[in-house]
Amino acid sequence: MSQQPVSRAADSAGHETLDIMAQAPRYNAWQVERIAPFLGQRILEVGSGTGNISAELLRRDPERLVLTDMDPAYRQHLKAKFGDRTGVSVDPLMLPDTGAAERYADDALDTAIALNVVEHIEDDAGALTTMRDIVRPGGHVVILVPAMQSIYGTLDTALGHYRRYSKQSLSRLMTSVGLQVIHAEWFNRVGVLGWWFNGRVRRVPLIPTGQLQRFDQLVPLLRMERLVPLPFGQSVIVVGRKR
Image 1 (cartoon, rainbow, N blue to C red):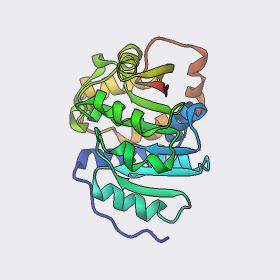
Image 2 (image 1 turned 180 degrees about the vertical axis):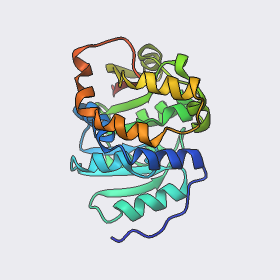
Image 3 (image 1 turned 90 degrees about the vertical axis):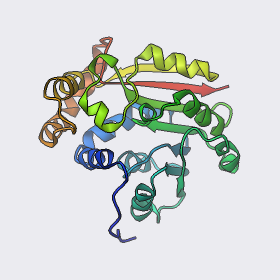
Image 4 (image 1 turned 45 degrees about the horizontal axis):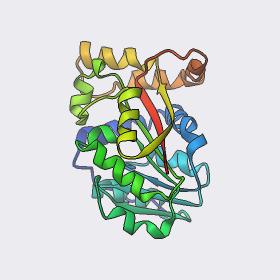
């Protein structure tokens, strides 16, 4: 399917950030690599945006992939980019959504993921409750969010982040909505310094493209962080199982 020109999302800073992140393919692949052990074959992605993560999910050839976003400009972009792929659909979804479980009942979803999304939602417990409800029993809810409130700065403000998390706070949130936490890890330890410097010292509103491209080149080396499990990271990943 040929891609047609699409409109910009209402969240201009978010759209520009997604365009910047499209220039970091190694980093996008690394995120999905870290959550891959918990992905099933019938997946719903919350907040798909322009499809940076969606493309990596499709490389794993899922049986069913539901891409969602609340912004029609992003949905238009996703349909232009992935609309001809077998097993892929693009839907509107704003969390929390008490009707989502019924709408997706026939899809028998085994995984719901939200990468860098939940921090944008004021009612994060309600968001996780919706994700819990749409997956079948035994399914996984996979969350990656910004970590360490101490590095909250101008980048977070520009992107509309309500908060940053820790392993403990996100695990408690998962447990509070009835999910069994089966995995929690800090992610991207080197990124802490860059986020702090840009958001707290330089106080810029967007990730510097040049810095990101240099960082992306280092990802093969940064994957080795798992050998040194230090108690911090730019992000945190927590996986919950629906009983």
